[in-house]
Amino acid sequence: MRNGEGRCDTGYAKRTQRQFDHFVPLPSIKALSTGTLCRRNGHIKPLNVVGPRIRRLRNAKNWSQNILAAKLQVAGLDKSRPAVARIESQIVHVCEYELLYFAKVLGVGLLDLYPEIDPSKSVHEAVTELMKPRKSMATVRRSRKRKGHKKSTGR
Image (cartoon, rainbow, N blue to C red; front, side, top):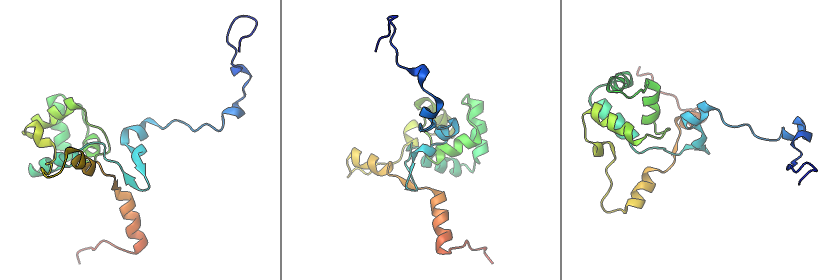
């Protein structure tokens, strides 16, 4: 709609704050970086396929997440221990260039970071199975509490 001055008049100045109260606020940076937006019905959609392999390779070297993070930083990739934990938990994406750092620091080839694919399955079936949503640990803990399960203390 045009007003008499030739500008488009949307009526924006006439709107009150009350009219905008029904809008949902944008997610926080923390929610975006930790992958919490991928949770649905207690399940988490994995955002990478290399996390479990990185964890296995790290454990095979008897390294903590702190040690791996420190070695990545020495190599030139700025990753903290919580960042390594999020990658291993598959709740963040991993960039291609970051995989090069992980492979170099862990002393393996780039393809060793990827999981084995069953040759009898199609690539699509294998990837779909790898990216299948899994239960979050918080959901598993809550369901254990409801059922009355307790961790054994080893006594």
